[in-house]
Image (cartoon, rainbow, N blue to C red; front, side, top):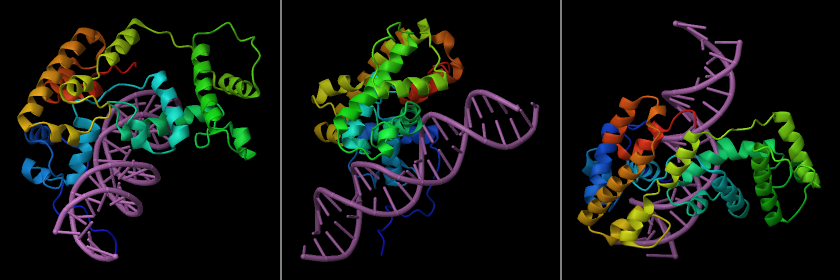
Length: 283
DNA sequence: AATGGCCACAACCGCCTATCC
DNA sequence: GGGATAGGCGGTTGTGGCCAT
């Protein structure tokens, strides 16, 4: 006999969450905290299962989520951690405050994995594909470092480094060939991008919350709620969000947004969704 | 303008583990 | 000790947006 389902699925809503549902869930959690996920949808007036509410909160509604693209430094760190930990996404995510395991997993599957393949690196073993095919054993740490070195080398190519006469390892030569094949294009950093990077740096709400609660770098809604009364938690959330909005507002390249009305709507109605809907498409 | 393919990501599914009784 | 349950986790899928034709 298999496991019992987490909830009675009859009459439950599935699929994408609406703004109204987000509001209900967010308001409930900010007001009451999380005691038992199974009870959350009933008490919050949602036709969702507890598991779905939990995922929605963790992956999307948490105020300390860091929105926006991954930096190359983050990419490198993910590669290094993946070489050590494998597909243990939650462990990897614990090194990135404000990032979720789902987000990192998606980023790995859609971007980093492909990037490594293009560069001739096996994303599973972190060995060069040629070596992997020959079943080269061991040296995991070295291969991880090689993956990161590749990314760093790609960065240096993107700024058209003139220092390409240095002696290269076979591995680096393989990578150079791949890059030539794929015609990696130079990316000029625009003022907008710089603004965006500054913005990303200002987005980490976690410390504002953590400094009020504890010094843990790995955020857990349950931990936070266990340490605070609902009122205290709500108050801190509001203060953090207020600081965050002020901070973001001063950096935003407003002219570049696609639909200002829509962005402002999201800002007003679902502050935590702000970055998702407001980041300019050119980024 | 229509459409089909591709891509990114949110959400779901099912298994595993920890905890409770 | 063992069954039931909730939470956590990783794999997979569905869907919407973008882009080329």
